[in-house]
Length: 57
Image (cartoon, rainbow, N blue to C red; front, side):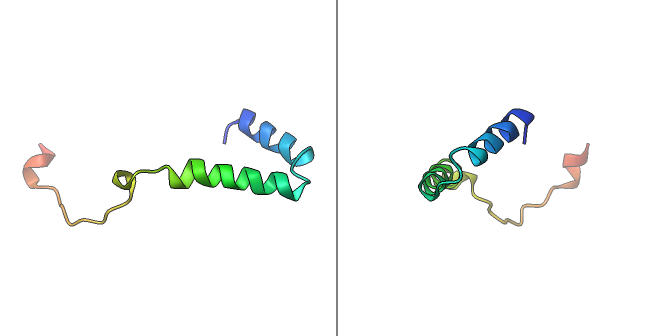
């Protein structure tokens, strides 16, 4: 977390973060922005594709 983001979060917590409504709005915005907008292509997919010795050259 950068210093600027940390300061912004701290300011939000000290001013509007005291109100439950604002916390709920921020949480919904962050969930929508960080979790729900990811495409299925970005999801972790365990696979068994191992490298070949020729790849080490």
